[in-house]
Length: 347
Image (tube, rainbow, N blue to C red; front, side, top):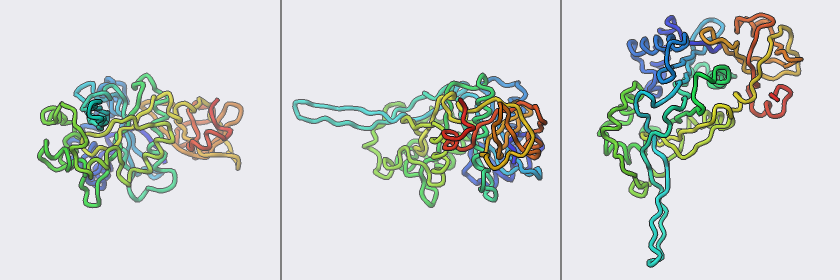
C-alpha cells in the first residue's frame, strides 16, 4: 500500500468511495461536479499554487494493483476565508454568600478559536480494506507530511471527531439544541457545512452563552463523547499526543482534539535517513516512510531497520516509494510504544 496525492484519474474511484461512505463523509459528497472541483483544487495545492488559507492536501491510499481504497486529507488552515465555528465548554459561576448558594454551571460559548489551525480531515477507508496496517498508514501518513513541510501549515493541528449518535443515526445533542435553531435534520446541516456552506450558522445560531442545564439530560450526556465507531481513531490520535481541550462540534458535540505540530509523536520522532536496500532481517519494526517529495509524495509502512544513519528496506518498499539506494527519506516507527523503547526512536 502507498499513500500519494490525489489526481484526476482517481475521480471514478473517489466517487465509488463517497457512495460507499453514505452520509458519514460530508467533506467528500457523492457529487461528480463537487468531487471534480475538489480534486482540481488538491492538484493545485500539491503544485504549490494555493495559499495556506485554501490549501487542500487530499491523499489516496492505493494498493499494488493500482486500486484506490481510501482517502485522507490535511487542510492548510481553517477559518481564514470564512468563520470556523466551535463551542468552547466553559464554566459560569453564580453565587450568593447571603443565601449560601454557589452554582457552577457548564456553559457553551460559540467562538472561532480554531481559526488558522491546520486540520486532519476526510479520513475514509473502504470497508473491505480495514485490516492490517492500512488504517494507521492512511491516517498517520499525514504526520510525516507535516514533519517534512512544516512551513505549509499552522503551529497547531486539529481534528473534529464524530460525535455520538444512536443506532438510528440520531444525535442527542442536535435533537436537544441544534434542531430548535436550524429547523432541519442533522444530516442536512452536516452536509451543508461539509460542502462549505457555513453562512447559515452565523445567521441562525445564537451568539449568547448557552447554559447546559437547560439542555435535556440526553444532550448533556454526549458533550465531548465520540461515536463508538470513532473510538479507535480517537485512541490512536491521543497516543500521538492529541488532547481534548474543551472544544466541541456545534452540531453533534463531538470533541475537537488538538496538538502542537512539533509535539505530535510521529513528527517529533521522525528522522531524515538515507535509503539502503537489503534484507531488514528479524530485528525490525514497522516504519512509516516518506520519500520527502511534495507533488511526487509517496508514503508507505514497511518493516525496516536503522543502521549507521541509513534505513534498510527491501526492494519492494523502495519501488513503492519510487526511490533507489541512496535516496533520501523521512521515517518514524509506526507504533508509539515501540518508538519509545525501540532502537529506531529518534534522538
